[in-house]
Every structure is written in structure tokens, then in C-alpha cells.
Length: 99
Image 1 (cartoon, rainbow, N blue to C red):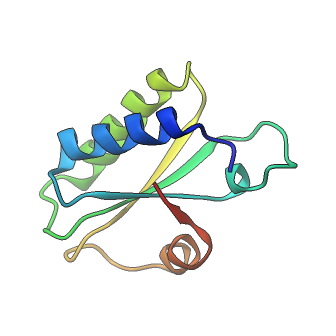
Image 2 (image 1 turned 120 degrees about the vertical axis):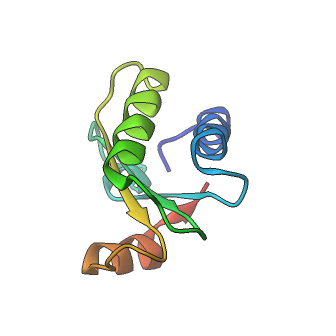
């Protein structure tokens, strides 16, 4: 996984600040491959409660993580009870790593 423990902890803390204490963050995609170079950060924010404004939450979380990662592109996927589950969610849960 191409993410330090400190970075993973900082991302997790941001998730809790923005989405509450039950929020969990999954890293998936190319950043799991230690042999790969570059690439954006693909994160799934898993929530136990419904989200009132998912677009705002995803954009805010993405921007804050991007700043933390020195401007690197961050894609955020949300998983919440009131949001439609897509095949990409299955990939994130099956192949991703919980931070």
C-alpha cells in the first residue's frame, strides 16, 4: 500500500471530523499496488447513517485529503444506507484496505 501510517491516520481523522465517529475509510485502486507508480487516491467513505448532502460531503472530503496529500488527485466514493450501491462499491469492499 502506497500510503504511510501517518497519512492513513490523518485521512481517518478527517473522515471522523466530517462524517462522524462511525465513519470508515477504504483505500482501493492503484495505490494498493506497491510496484505501481503515480496514480490518484481512490477512497471510499463508509457511513452507517444516511447522508443529507452526499455531493458536498464527497467534495469536501476529497479537497481536504488532496491538501493533505500535497495536491494529489483524490476520488471519493460514498457508501451510506440512503445511497444506491453500485458495482464499484463491491470492488472497494472486496479489494480495498480499511484505513
